[in-house]
Length: 332
Ligand SMILES: Nc1nc2c(ncn2[C@@H]2O[C@H](COP(=O)(O)OP(=O)(O)OP(=O)(O)O)[C@@H](O)[C@H]2O)c(=O)[nH]1
Image (tube, rainbow, N blue to C red; front, side, top):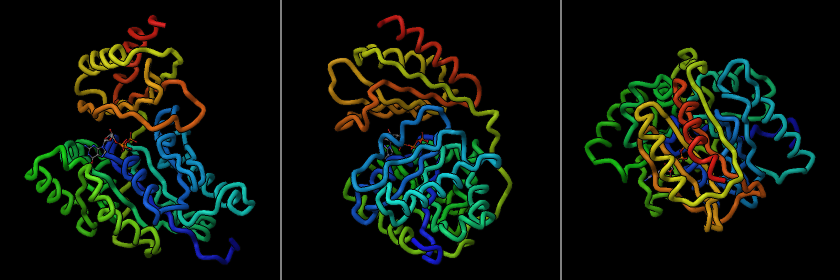
């Protein structure tokens, strides 16, 4: 790409912890219209899991931004990663790509990220933020919008809001949530998704348009309201281990830990190697809601050790991880 070439569109996918960002991006990448998307995944924990779930042939390997949240003023990982992508695209060390998809952490306030796209002259010449897509959990979203300032900012800055997990919520609750969101983000397109595959194509249609067409930079977005979160209050605990344990043992220990820390853990995610299973198991808890474990088709990379990440506002994630290790570690 020469310097005069049109800036490449960037899609910013945001949404509170566990709202369904990785799930949506996975579906986008499986849609031929999104082939050739470069992916930057920002995670709060020092061990990344999402980028492992988003490996696709034909697209550059997802790049993990693990150095803290890119919305922090002092963190220029996003700027550096965009420069690196541009460089590697020019020297041919990664396949060409037509757009960049950025998955923010669940506790990211998009406002400072949007500001950076305007303030950084190099980014302005090479990339254009074409849309902010915000995932809102259909079950937990209303309460999360009220109690978590980052979630409210994510909705306020959205061009499109996707209410996920409609299959797990009742219709009236989804209607109320939709009403709340239209008041928070009157300019945003609001869509509702369940898990049915049939709906995916329809849901992706507006995203596809947004991804291919660069919108003016101040398109309908809320104004900068200041930085809506305090990372000092977000604690993550990560554990990587090579012991291969039976599923019932792991599930039982996780259940005990979640019960003991009810109401305090915001997120648990893990990629696990389990005895007698030749494929990896993905576990996800969002607040107190445990999603069914999922078997992946294959290991996404050569790294076959188990990884668990817990996230909380207080030190519960550290306490819970200590308890989990105490139960599982002596079983090697
Ligand atoms: N039933 C149902 N489950 C969903 C839906 N969308 C996402 N999930 C599940 O919700 C859990 C969390 O989804 P993710 O896509 O990992 O959420 P995320 O926003 O990327 O999570 P973080 O990166 O940790 O903030 C997973 O178990 C998903 O399978 C949906 O529409 N319906």
